[in-house]
Length: 131
Image (cartoon, rainbow, N blue to C red; front, side, top):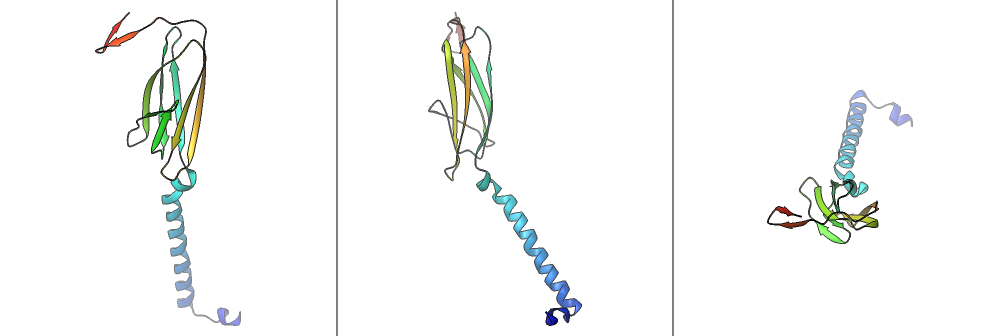
């Protein structure tokens, strides 16, 4: 203990500089690697209009490499945005989004929809709506 007290000012400046450098490197490393610790996150909204048999699900999946909607793979852009149109059956429906990152961490989000009666049928042909 007596040896540490007898150190000169240059030694103390060097020691504090080294500790500060290691602290900055540690904080920077944590910020850059936080996606590994946090895993994948899903933020999504379901838009369903009354009387329609179609619903649109839009959102983002942060850090996701694979995402599926009711077991079917859907595509995401580089930022993780996705948008899908799905058909909703009359009665009670559960829509499930599953996402997985490159480290194997998963996330799930579910939506529950209740429709009371059959909606008007719509057929799409060459981007034209036919009733």
